[in-house]
Image (cartoon, rainbow, N blue to C red; front, side, top):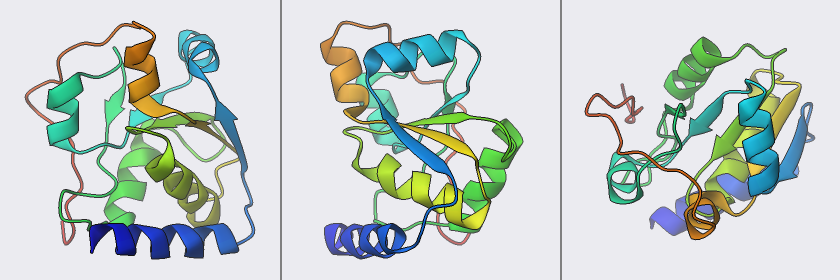
Length: 146
């Protein structure tokens, strides 16, 4: 059911014309942009953060919860607290699929001008032996209905 919801949401978002420049990046691009001060937003679930760790300095804002629910207005408000629409932002998830949908949501709902999607997600980052730290205990998830 969660997969079906995600596929429908993803298809709907892709059908809309993007206002932002959504750019797929690899680990080298992520490291370069993060070092330049572009905020990294990890949209995975709390369980995923705890399981694998997180990129040092990243912001933890769940997009789709463990039950497949999203609360787009709450999530967008938290993203706007990290970066305004005229500022670039990097989104990362487990494999790059959820960030693709979230990137298009940012472009459609708030007009973000530059959104970077880490195309292979945290799996590739960890697979390359890049730095990860334990997720903090106070996490910023956005459950549906919050």
